Length: 129
Image (cartoon, rainbow, N blue to C red; front, side, top):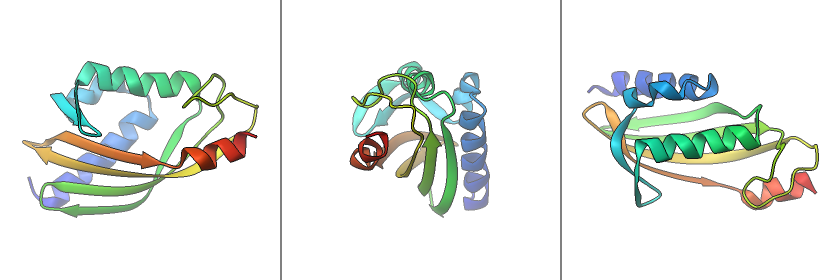
């Protein structure tokens, strides 16, 4: 897969998760993948994403930077939303949050098989206080 194809695939992935089109995840992720180093099924990954959407119904990922090199993707995203349920161990306060997320992927055969992500939970907690 060319770097341009991989870039388009990642942009399609972000569009799909923002549209809550989780039924499309087989287009983007392998059946078994490593999520922050832990093996999980694609169904478990989707359940985790749906859990985020349940807790933060207006959650949006905005892509700020994207680097594609070979079969690897690095992304810096700005995430926004208003938690309506406990999320990441934090109690909702009615306030919206905006924070940076870093995500790194390894793709094989046109779908990601490894994903690592990091977000600033302390920044989220400060905004909800």
